Amino acid sequence: MTHSQRTALAFGVVALLLVIIGFAQSWNVALAIMNLCLISAVMALGVNMQWGYAGLLNVGVMGFAALGGVAAVLVSQPPIVEAWQSGGTRLLPAAIAFGLMLAAAIFCYRRLGRGRHRTLALGAILVTGLLATRYFLDPAVAAIEAVNPAKTGYLGGMGLPIIFSWAFGGVVAAGIAWCIGKVALGLRADYLAIATLGIAEIILAVLKNEDWLTRGVKNVTGLSRPVPYEVNLQETAWFIDLIAWWHDDRLAFAEAAERGDLLRQFVIDGSSIFVKLCYAGLFTLVLALILWLSVRALASPWGRMMRAIRDNETAAEAMGKDVTRRHLQIFVIGSAVIGVAGAMLTTLDGQFTPTSYQPLRYTFLIWVMVIVGGSGNNMGSVLGGFLIWLVWIEAEPVGVWLMQVGTGWLGADHPLRLHLIENAQHMRLFFMGLVLLLVLRFAPGGLLPEVVRKHA
Image 1 (cartoon, rainbow, N blue to C red):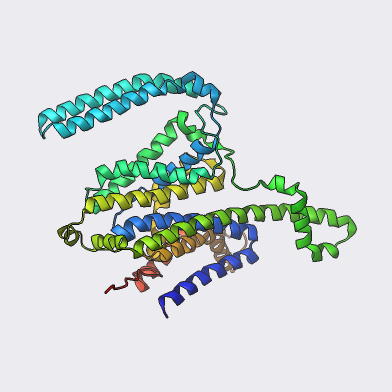
Image 2: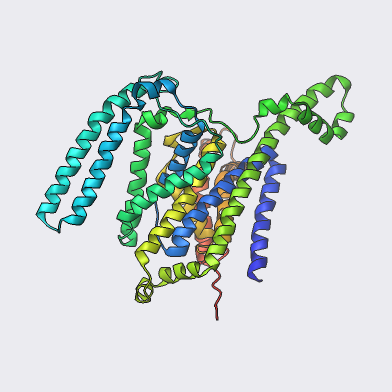
């Protein structure tokens, strides 16, 4: 079987699974899963760029995804005028003090030689700068958070369409990744993993506690949408006519008294499906664009250079390649893609909840997507994003069904049967481990392993 045939077969199986879910459960469920699969595929592409292209072990995926979520809030939410008037303008002196501290620290680090004098000077600059920053920042933050804290208590955003936040999320994540990479990319692979995990926890801690920025754990709800609302669709004439035409055969055989109620139910169900299809169209466009750019980049001389650095850094350095600079480059690009996915996820949810970003849990899922799909292969990462999210979501209902069937010989009220059914949600961990074990045993390179084409 050729690689193209294998790819087509793998995606055909995933499509078949979604169709089965649509018929067995509902098309609303199938489309909801597909939208999350699309977002997961984008996120897996970002991780694959870092690991599959350059061998960078980034375990701070959720931190960059959270930055994308912050971008959705900062772009789409309207500005809170009262908060800006009471404390927003007072943030400027704090920002100036913080910027001066960074500039002085960089100047001192570059101008002074290694030794005790540089250490003492840097310590004095950092302590003085932080104290000055807090002196201006604390009163401003207190004033902002005091403005109607039950509903706002933060600065708000720019009031723009939320779809702009997808690009802005990538920019924010890329900027933070550049700052992190300048410090952490000189570390060994295992130390880099620990550093990125710790940085992700720091990012999430800031988002949870700095209420003036994103309301913290009070969450930001009611984010705007790039697609219509179901309620508006249900009151729109063209949509009602469309649903009536689609279900014309069923409505024709219904009693006159029941036809109105039946049409109303069809409109309600159809509006939810239509909205999910609109999201799926937007997410598919983003995924297709990033995938196309990724494939073109990997096939270019730049992509071959990145793989050469991944395979043998020492040889690449001997050939005159700036390994650290290239690592920083791909770290920033991959983090930007993760930031785009984070903004898309927050847009789909319609709210920003910092506590939902769990670095260890969901970072593990994204890495499983890349490993199972095939690291170094862009199509493999997309496949892994779809397949692993399908397994993650459907493992619980399948687990409940297996427990019910497997314990059918026990009494309906048997304690063991009730215990197994109540804890069937843990089957998703079993299925995830089983899938990973089977792939690593029988396909160590992933379901769609990397294909290296030799160039003359």
